[in-house]
Image (cartoon, rainbow, N blue to C red; front, side):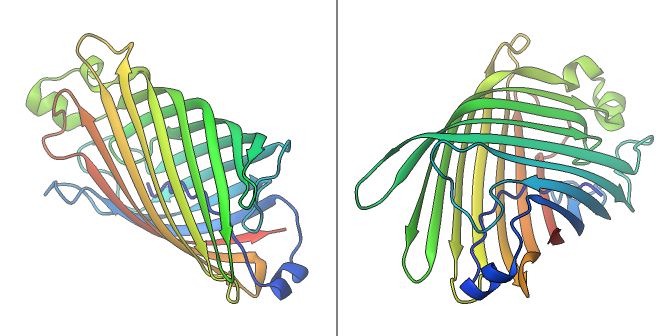
Length: 281
């Protein structure tokens, strides 16, 4: 299963639910999902499930506080039912590791507080997202966060940074049909990273709607004439079950990659849907 859904959500639940919930940062989750490249007639519909172990200092009911360290770590193991059709030796197992660090260091605004933070992240994917054998992204930069509160509240986050990305494909079809070797399939280099995140929480029910868009634009230190761009759009909803320690996530994700050369014979756009149950201890 290649449904490696990266969800950075901020959960706000009713006052009664908050009082019944613990504040431990560690959690476990079980998810099920599917993904496909609909632009490819021969692409498989990958179905499967996964297990995640989570450490989240922010959790889903908090906002960032000045001069406080926040670690958000998630490791996930997946097993898919349908292997990717273009790769005869594709394994059914895959794994993801995601690490975010953020520390607000400056605030401004009189009626509305705005926070500036240092931000760092690492994302590593092994045998994930069907065509990808290995992919990693490291980012360092600045983050901007604020919350607009009323009866309900809206959280806004922006991140801008510099990143290093490495991508390795293990794909039979481009080599057999187009004569490309692995050196042409793989990418590594530096670029710019941007992320825009939104979360709207209904205070009485604790239900939250989320939307996040990120882009890595790799355009230097690549081999001659190469570049690598990837866009990710994630839409989701979070529903508390009894309290904040038990959450149900629904999500869909769209991942689009762009290269200087079409290596796979179709538009590299991956669609995903997933449902996930998260339990905080």
